Image 1 (cartoon, rainbow, N blue to C red):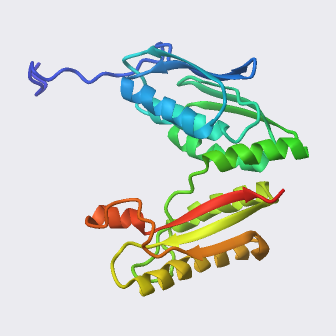
Image 2 (image 1 turned 90 degrees about the horizontal axis):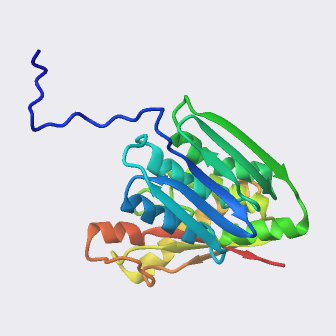
Length: 264
């Protein structure tokens, strides 16, 4: 029977539950061990970048094994798993298409659970999730947790209405993550610096960048973050991170930067 598919069109690859797709994160003699199946060199490069970004300074051992056919969500989920466990003191996880198992020591259980939310959104509903966090809220554990979080923190963009200080709806989930980290690390100060592109006069850019940073600080204060912990500044267009000659570059330059610093 003719199906409408020509000989030149291969059948799409499908994933079989019998295929042994596995991914594991463990600690072995204080070395972070990341091992499991990958789909491509690009996938492996993403994993290497995630380890470098989220576990700076930690000794690591990476063991990847090629597996040509995996679930479509596999690449994103494995990268998100590395990011989620960066908030733990002793990360351990096992992922297959059927199950996610996480065991870890944490300084702040609610912050660690929040970090898992992005990963959960990548998993299919059929994946069984088994997470156990052992909270050890000692001063030393909290300090280690916060140091790692500050080193790897990437807040994401805080978007404003054009030429104004009113935040767009997409900004609030970003600020929720800032609040969660600030609540977990109560001895830290938070620097909030506004930046603009080079459109308009520099006097206006300086004013706008500071006003936007102040709007962010006001929101954080309304969520319970002490004003004495917030350091607000505006850099105008003086510190671009992209080319102001392009629309894309200008969009990148219009940003809020956060920096956490321990006051101990």
